[in-house]
Length: 326
Ligand SMILES: Nc1ncnc2c1ncn2[C@@H]1O[C@H](COP(=O)(O)OP(=O)(O)OP(=O)(O)O)[C@@H](O)[C@H]1O
Image: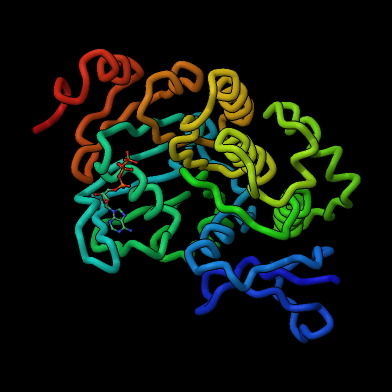
């Protein structure tokens, strides 16, 4: 069966995403892609939150990939967050209480902070998670108003988020998923799409960089993957999507020491002077492998301190009490 999966509409559907056979489709969405669908494909049981994750992960672009900075000596500001406040949409509980953060291209930033300080909420608000409502402040991404964009448009613009708990997609092989994502990006850039064989050539060095066994390509996306395998797979997706700002939420959790080194090596290999990384982590050990330019401490929904790597070392040695603003 051939099916058509419309990435851009996933987040806007009132119901779980569905797959329509191409024979019954009368209109083709510009971001949709035809692919062979295994007969066991089951999307109807997916909930809306998962759809959001799929869309946030899948949609790719490069509308702005051809942009050039006018002043090539000065790094471009990728993300500028000013006085951002946000609440949980359902309970109206205030979580973010005035976050300020600027990320230039080529920089690696790390956010640390006690459990419940708002780190994940901040990253989810950046990618437009429907659980949260922004109540104040501004966020610009490459000069555009990020908060006015739909989640898929944010992804189109070059934002990628690796979730603490990566989504499973039953019925879609990893290979199909990555191929779709890659070709969606190429289409947006006006480049010819890759055949599965060409794509394998593109993917092979990335697989090697993440030290991932090619047999994972035949398995359904993240289904039955161990925690560490899911994290590697997230970095593989990042490598394929070539996002300009990657938000990595606890990418080190659940990784053994070898896997941590592999993942860190792969992330470092993806860094260029044109892209940036925002890591959320509890542990200095990740920062030993992916060296941050800036370390921020989040407390009660705001960034209360910023420093360099030595701040993470101080934290490891003395704990939050020593550097708390309270
Ligand atoms: N969808 C939600 N519904 C209710 N409460 C929420 C929701 N999202 C976040 N919170 C609350 O907001 C606070 C901040 O949570 P968040 O996950 O952002 O913290 P964190 O700093 O990432 O924590 P951790 O280090 O434990 O991952 C917590 O008290 C959490 O319970």
